[in-house]
Image 1 (cartoon, rainbow, N blue to C red):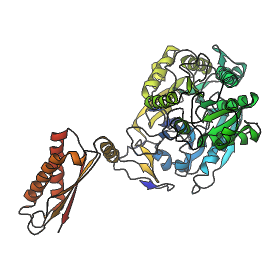
Image 2 (image 1 turned 90 degrees about the vertical axis):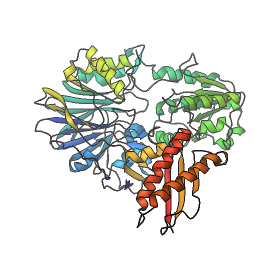
Image 3 (image 1 turned 60 degrees about the vertical axis):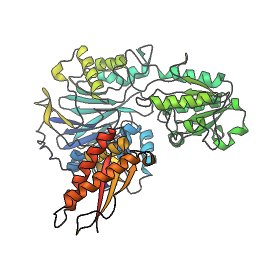
Image 4 (image 1 turned 45 degrees about the vertical axis):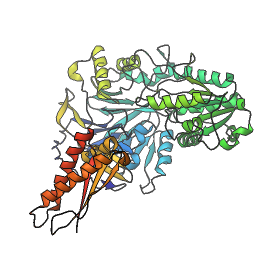
Length: 581
């Protein structure tokens, strides 16, 4: 793996497929991430001699990637063509769309970044943690702006999401527009779009759309999502009416909700205690962007919270997903330096449970309940306290009808969600031949003057690229398998001193075990293993001259591995240490 910040390509032993050059007049679309998972959203669009990159996000580690910090899109195709990468277009400030910028921007040629004001502030704030990256070129745009990048003409439009300054992108082509709304939710009341939304999308009534790339996150949820306005009204009601101290856990990325909670607290005479680094950072960014306009005395530090009556305090905290070291969990288990959840408190979890976090959230709720506090969540409250930031099925259908694309490619979701979204497009009248459900690094093209929509049989490089400590690069599969094996069954080290003249061991082998068996309670197993190790080494070394240490290590590994599996039904990583004396 290459060192962080260097632009050298990581070694990869797999033979790369030969990608044909783009034919004149054709359009190439490559989803580099975000179509087999939730996260690491990044798409390349190639027209003529110009390549545009849409978003540059990361994905948090999974069970299958132990020890990894983040999973990144594979940008090898862009690195090989970085002289033609004209711009990075960032649709909004969430990390699944911006998080990979510090790791990848220099690898793809440091293109200028086109985005709106708030998003640029969030990127700049994070870039300060990566001083080795040269200063980035930010070019601010606003909805309804038109720009020319290379030989391409682009427009932008406003999109409703959980963070302000979200934008969609329209790329003009001779055959019609390519439209990328990115993360999308319809602002509506009881299924009726607001006047603002109707105005945002009105220009599509007169447009010819060639291709739509649309978010699939919530496509399996029927109907319309809960309007965020209902959530803000519900939170305001709890802030106004709750007796005692109110602790609200939410995502720091829910910036509009965070601002609304702070403004509501000020309105009802409560001081705000902010807990969580990301929450504090986003509040500072919201102030810089002019989204949050409250006096500094609206906030009190955690070490001064006890100076105020409990009914005059709102604690705004990260950690609603039950993260072990987040502020909410530390308050719940009494490990926070200044704050502890106690009887009489009300804890409001204004967040849905991210798949995979169910056990962590249950543990958090248990700790809160043991502390004697009341728990309110979106599942238990009659008043709305949370809403998704992605459009449900009927909102997606509304946008399909509004844009009326000739071709459609679902993005932002795993394959199951993308397939459901493709089915929705067919239900709305689109021909199956006009749909493509891609994988990461699929090469999709519009060919023959816009009359043909195809997926090529070859793919762009698609190996997992990860941030692992201070390194970034292609993670070899064997490394992940070893880490998984260590996590599952531990390691077993056999250390033997071999007399190179006689082929005999100087003494009984030493054994070290970690995460496999408790040595003090497994003496019989260890004694048998020592005997097998001694016999294997001496039998293999007999009549060897010179001693072939590599061959003996392999034989020792195989025999010990086989024996341990027979006795324990486990597969620890066996490490033979053979020392010639």
